[in-house]
Length: 148
Image (cartoon, rainbow, N blue to C red):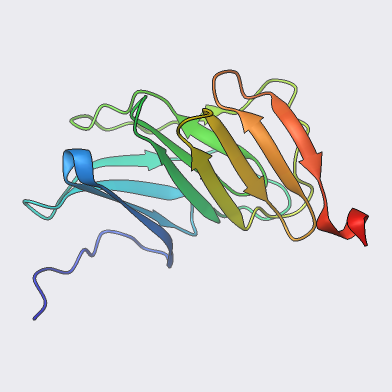
């Protein structure tokens, strides 16, 4: 039986994460809006919006969560991090990744966060990038197609 329907997104959802430690659900829609929900009350407690224009597609495609720093990671062509998320307040801006960002040239289709290494792995249709979460620096880039 259905317990609740979360209806505040206006675009298709592309990713959902559950944060067990805080009993929160994080949802992300194509239109670059991330919402944090309290699953005990089924209420949206925070809305994060990436207002920067992204190349090549202006939509979010990947979502991650850093439990150590209470940070939300999202990506399209460029990874975006909202650091030290305060779950009781509205936040309307996303922090840009790195001032000298040289990353994906096509939309990111996957995002993984490695808690132990404090690194983010992002991939597009041809390349995998590994990023240092502390400073946003790209540590590595490779393509499985290079090995063929």
